[in-house]
Length: 589
Image 1 (cartoon, rainbow, N blue to C red):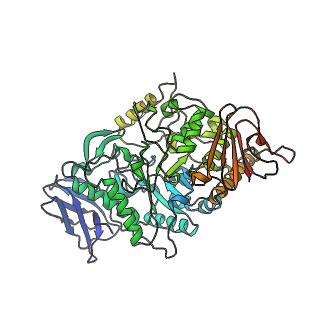
Image 2: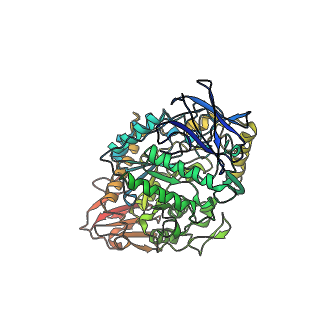
Image 3: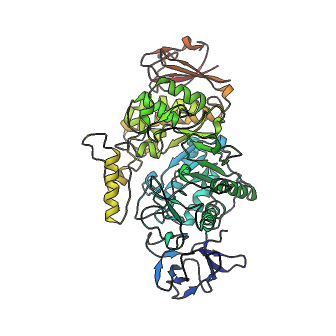
């Protein structure tokens, strides 16, 4: 177990330990038994102490310098919210003797936001959907951040208690049950963690130590991993890694925006984190998956002599496919829009490869992707950012229609990369995924509104949905059309769901999308907008042109069997070797 915050020490005693060089004195004030427990300070700035008569479930506050009280930045649970008292919780992983994890290279990832995934918006609600995800073919669930945040709703990236499971999602018992049930269904559960900044409301860590430094991220001050008094802060976050992986039992991390985690220490904090995660996996005889959202297209992120992540997110295939199928000129999409971008993304992964100017960062960015193994790149056609940061939170099926959305999906799965879906994508969910929050500070609420208006100022007269209104959150909940009784909704949704199930089956069977580039040969025909991807067992034909294509013209024999097509309306009378514009098909060799 971790030894930061309230914990059980090696002698079985309830103890407290925190790095707090800003405090002259520090005590734990228990609200349930009325006792105040003074802590001892050592020369390195740590306060420690035994808490006799303290019990799990007791609520408490820290008392600094005899008078100032506030919640514990290392709290495991905030039952009354970010500004309320902390609660002593000791989450103990329930080991599953037969569970050894999922290999990162074999992952079919499903990103979901607990609050909007089900009507309940809780871990208990999501647990009911695990058989559905199993039957879909998912073997890795990526939970958007769970750490506690202000109010009742948030994307999760405004968390201020890195150790604390948000009370809005349930209890640690609920989380343990969710993980155990996922494992029973052959699904690993990884967590999106935010170690690059604290949210703008409810952060009490600065009362104890210089947890942040002036250099900014897009969301606030950076975490201080290499400045004055940083050793205790590094230990705080490394203990947080132990908390979620070792104590709670999650199967790994997707780490948010690691490119803005700056550290001049050797080893870099990111390498320390991946090394620690692997050591936990070794000790517990299970595979831990470590994924970085870096988005600078640097091979060092996954290199063994670099940060050694199992994989990194890459948005380039998304940008390339999206911009061709639905031309646009905002954010990164304005750097794309050519047919050859799709080809480059399929062949090498990185389009931002050091030769392409990134207009968002105003710089050339990246290295060649030729030397990055495909299984080390996580690709998608939509995720929480790419949907949530569109003007109306529109999903791909809403923006460009089902036909082109299915072509994009086939392109993703036929590529050699690890695929990730965003919740609801598999059946064509049309509800938006909007940005939402529930801050308590009026000035901050107004600043967020202004920020969203500025984000979409390129659309004259456009007024984005108010992030603070509960309606923005409720509109973002999945409607679960496959379970809807209305036939006009149910039929296309079920066809889309079956299409995704088959895509996943083909990927898992290595019939399409082999990670071996020699078994995933890409050929392009710019004049007609055709791309073929040839493997040992199949040829995938992707028609990015507007006109129909004859499969025979691209090396596909009429003796070949049609395995799958994006044209879900095909009938027995339809010629299987004619591919309409903006459609695709997979043929058996």
